[in-house]
Image (cartoon, rainbow, N blue to C red; front, top):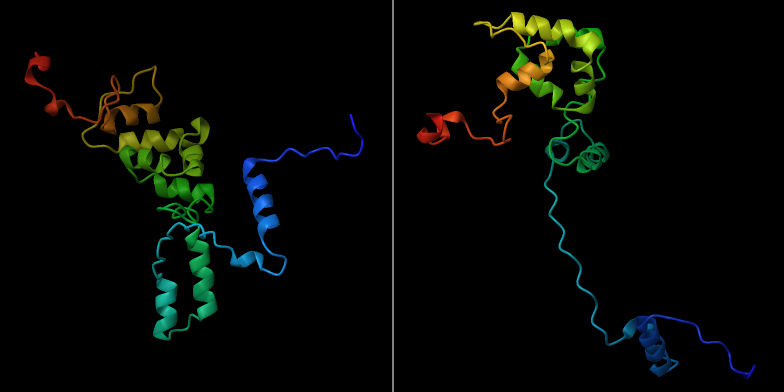
Length: 181
């Protein structure tokens, strides 16, 4: 082994090609003026103008900075997320007072809307009276809840469109008549 040779560093083939190209370029040439074609960038979706920007262009009291701030906040939200953010910040006793007038199907939809509403509506101790009053207010009254189901589970059984045996979304009327016999 000779001590005069420097140990070679491992590098990827891409880095080795780059090093060879940089050695082949004349010293006075700029590295930015290479003949390699630039990589194509992905197309970005056009941003639709929101209500705040429309108000700013219409000359109302909303300034352009406020409109840009509103646009930046809502640009992070995809779909309809964030719509129930302020509802769950209300006190629980007020929410339970409002929810007592809803039927069980609507309570079930609210429980599926967000994690915080789910935690509130499916809490066994706090929401039992709410579910009980929702079932009592139904007209005509459904059969009594089986002992092995909670009231939210019973509402799911009664009011959802999915089959609890095969998880399909088809109604019984769509099944062939031979299977009904």
